[in-house]
Length: 154
Image 1 (cartoon, rainbow, N blue to C red):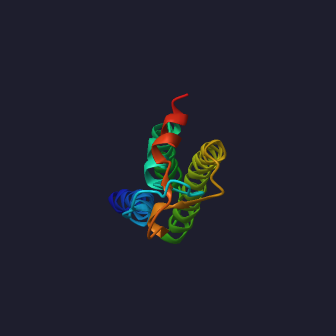
Image 2 (cartoon, one colour; image 1 turned 45 degrees about the vertical axis):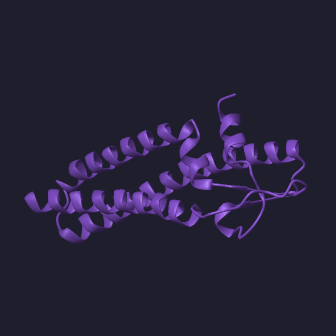
């Protein structure tokens, strides 16, 4: 029984670590330095990490993922107690991990879609034809991150 709990904790930690590393990876990819925009620029730039974490649904998504992780742990504890061998337990743990990955993707995709829609609205209002993540912009571009964040509060 103790081994099962250890395995479950390891799986739960691995899933949480993947989520944190995914979000952290996005943060690293999205950071960068930029320069002031030229007055007539039609190119915008945004800090995607700030927009994702600044979206009102982000905290709810994190909470939902934590609940889903806790439910997966509970399911594993209940079902694995009746399983005959470690192979069955490992297969079930893999199924639960896949379920958590799908849930995470679902939650993140929903927020990304809303962020992208807000970016489009702000870009259209400002007459921007292209908006790029700020880490790919070497020079120039109008930073609209704060304008998009304000859009979330409306």
